[in-house]
Image 1 (cartoon, rainbow, N blue to C red):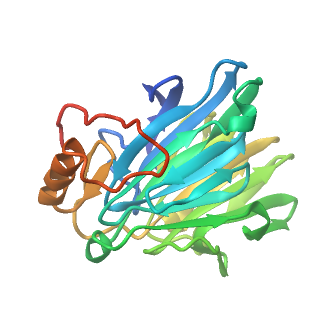
Image 2 (cartoon, rainbow, N blue to C red):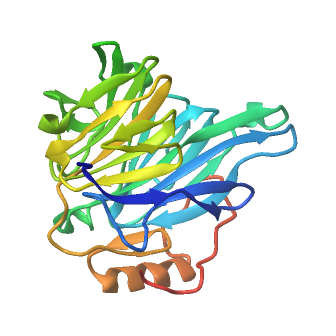
Length: 293
């Protein structure tokens, strides 16, 4: 019997000068644990005159997690952070009451051919921390816990699981795990999971029950403690989830909150450009037409 309650297909979304595959939110599933937004970015082949340029834009009420497979992004924010993220490292930016950031191709890559491929994820903050001061943390790839078991490679990118803890400073019980195998393997990790759980197939395939699932799908489990599947050869999957919040969180554009009034205030503040500024940046992304989800 399959433990899969919902299958979410990757849907394309335009974020400016290239497309991403949107995975969350979905009309039948707005969140998995505290995870409220996941974009599969790329793989994009950018020529010597194509670059990633996402001008300054605001966030409230969430932490963003950027995890690259290929390429490089220069992150700048209103705290004064200016830092390049490379494959395997984690950028963890907590917006709290408000932060502004830009994401661009680093200057040294802007006139050469390049690749960009990764995941961009939003994790909602608990109600009591939604108005905390913004923070930024960067964790290098070598500092992410990784291990091998029965020929399967694991990384605990964020959160706690398997008796291990990632150095990424999360604010609620969660996990974000990479699992890779070059050979077919049976995976049974339910005893190490909790709360709600989802599985994203990046490459290869998995079998659950009598069904085979391919890349660009998120599978939502009925019961995270029964998370068991067969991993095909040369497969990479990501397990994410954790304890859901007791209250609903609303999303409008880049704003996440359990209080719609805070979202309305953020909309007004961005329209009036009273959010903090990103040093040396003059552009900004305008507020889209209002629609709270």
